[in-house]
Amino acid sequence: MKTSESRRRHLIKQALAKEGTYDPLAIPRCEDINDDAPEMPRGIWFGEWLGKFLMSLAGLAWEFCTSLPIMQRLWRSYFVQYLHGVCVVSLGILFQKLGMLHLDEVDFVGGPAKGLTAIVTGPTSGIGTETAAALARRGATVILACRNVESGEDLKTRIERSTVKSGRDKPDIEVWKVDLSSLKSVREFSQKWESQKRPLHILINNAGIMSMGAAREETEDAFEAHMGTNHLGHFLLTLSLMPSLRRGAQESADFGPSRVVHVSSSMHLLAAGGVRKSDPHFRLPNSYRIEQAYAQSKLAQILFMKEMRRRLGPESPVQVFAVHPGMVLTNVTRTLPQWIQSLYRMMLQWMLLTPSQGSRASVFAATDKDALLEGWKSFGYFNSNCRPLQTSPAGQDMLQSQWMWKWSAEQVQLPPELDLPEAS
Ligand SMILES: NC(=O)c1ccc[n+]([C@@H]2O[C@H](COP(=O)([O-])OP(=O)(O)OC[C@H]3O[C@@H](n4cnc5c(N)ncnc54)[C@H](OP(=O)(O)O)[C@@H]3O)[C@@H](O)[C@H]2O)c1
Image (cartoon, rainbow, N blue to C red):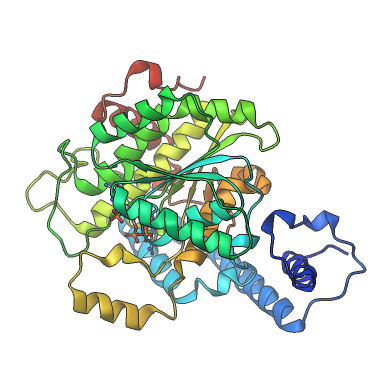
């Protein structure tokens, strides 16, 4: 009999509870569990079964609809793709928790990270805080790459305190300054990092903005703020850190390839026609719409991931992923008036994930051995339930990802020695 994921977790929890310990590093894999171990409670089994059943049903319905010729014709329309995106995002908010009944808390997701070095951008709030804390708890050296060093130091103290309180060793955490909306700051960060010749095993590009309700803004490099912060800053950072990522893979053969994880979003579906090549920075009068600017920046992260995977190839010592963390209750609405934020929290708190639940996809992609293989099913994109998922049609457009790479390299004035050669 095949041991299911939830049964495995249940057994592990039972064993750990008996010993009074809670050590995610001690979690055995499915294959290591003896099949004559006790059955798990019916409630857990039913939850997992229901989640899988509903997901399969939705998958079948989708495949049936898209196989109809009329639907295929309609699907070519950007408007229909946009409507589909709106439905996916809205239904995602309503039903996301159902699709992840099989998942447990973040400490039970992914693999070990002891002895590894991880950089997490944007760790001072929301999903980034929980991602950094989860990696620190399992023994990684975590670099808090934040724009506000004071908040970073405060977070470092909080993670150290809570980790020690839970009976583990004091984690190794460093606070480094980087502002993703400034190319100068990104260059300073990566030059300082590279000068130390340290290995890097995990880079989590998590920092992001969504300036709801605010007017169009530009970064100091005159980029539209979402594109500049969410994509272009991370584009330069990632390619600048490639020597360290390669070193990381060489020095930790057990872990396998080093990993880059982009925290993207299902909102990329709303950039249905792809990146606006003629005006990516929304400079034309009356062209700016916040949801399009955000969606496009999240699509840009996916296109960057796809092209990087293509250029690096399957055997590369560096593997790249993008994830949708889920719809999560964080400070992402901070630009809205206070009363709308309170209303948003009040109305959606039952449907949205906690930041800790939102960190699971990042931690999975960054540490789980299965992610390397699973990632090939969707060319590197994972949903918030840690399962591979296809991106939007625009996200699968190879010409678009090639264009995106060249355009991004021009925008950040990428030195030729940092560029990756075209795949043959
Ligand atoms: N929440 C969701 O429902 C959701 C859904 C899909 C995708 N995402 C993505 O998940 C990621 C994390 O978002 P979140 O929800 O956790 O939001 P959040 O609570 O607002 O956290 C964003 C983090 O990014 C940092 N940041 C923003 N601009 C930066 C810059 N220029 N340089 C360096 N750091 C910067 C912030 O730093 P400060 O603390 O200094 O402001 C903060 O630490 C984002 O990429 C977001 O697009 C979120």
